[in-house]
Length: 73
Image 1 (tube, rainbow, N blue to C red):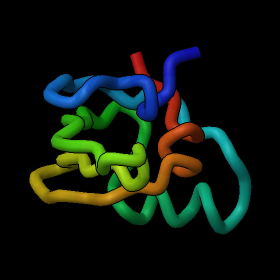
Image 2: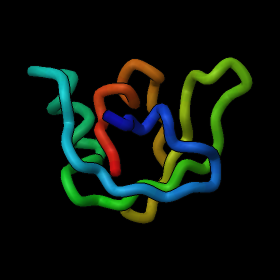
Image 3: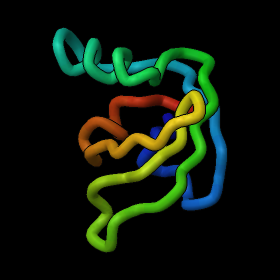
Image 4: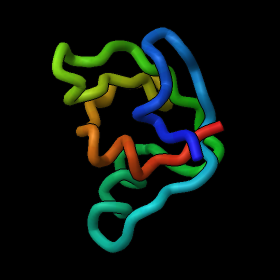
């Protein structure tokens, strides 16, 4: 299983599935990260946390733990 955390800077990918439960999953979905949406990894902080991505035309920063819940192609 490949997660958003595994995607390299400068690459685009498509969300396949969201893992996790309850409020965390709901929060990720509320930010626009849903099944089938294209995500572009813009940059990663020096220690790997957070990850900055472009989703639906806006920039979003995700924690490593949240990025690991997002399964991608």
